[in-house]
Length: 378
Image (cartoon, rainbow, N blue to C red; front, side, top):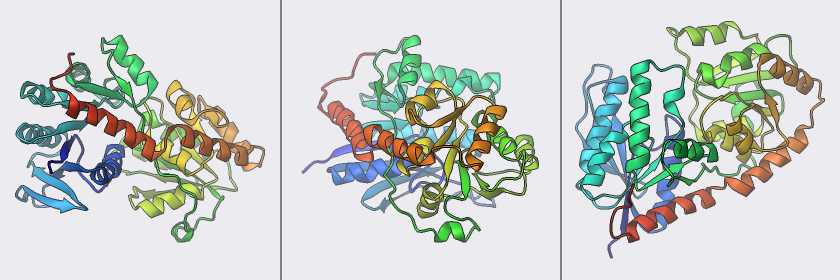
């Protein structure tokens, strides 16, 4: 019997070891496999410490075909070469193509020209981020426009992203946010090994970037001695001035354990935290915030329309460092209703962000692509 086939592009590979898209793919791929799909996931081969690159290969990962390509180029250039090779390979394979992110959406013109169907997650408004130079912003702007008009189905992970795409002439975007598996329990061993106690710390899990308010979070927390710890997960680089500034602002009660990708450890850090701190100022539905809701975390988030829609009512929002410091002070004194906030987080997750619901919405789109006889007009 011929199976329906989906090719997943745009990520560095599974299992997840990098970010939100990889985590999403590592969850969606087994779901589709169990629904009878043949699933291909493209994975990037990195050069070793000597610059040598392994040959291309395919393997099986839990019933999912992984297609491994590499490039001797590094950083963003290596990613562009990898994406190019993936698209060229997908052109000769059957199935619907699910592209996660639009950073090289211009390559998808080839997929459409070869008669392939493309579903593309449009991610956040990457070209608006302050960290990028003008040439990089221009590249992202071009690819966002191309992706939103070339994909058979552009997927917006947040209503505000769909509205943004409409302002740029794309009226076909379907809103499907991220999902997360509910966490009802977690062994405390992982956190006690780090010197933490349940309910005795706050946690932040994000890329260490200015637009994620990491410096404001650390500075606000470190203004005075607390009865709590602050755990900041993320990669820090010695040659990055912003990373150095964040670490320099930290009091002795701030911990920097680095980036942690072990699912059980991260789940335990979330579940046993007194509250989750989310400083993202831009973007759509952030997977880390959804995972905090799934872990029934009280949320302290930057006050913007993206975070407000995801976290909902009953959480705590700040616009600047002073407001955040005030929230932390009230939290430290036991003046905030954390129990109610945790309950509201669980309710919000159940209403909007369960894995089965989100994966089912994606499968419905993929099934529709399989049924269609021809390409959807742009």
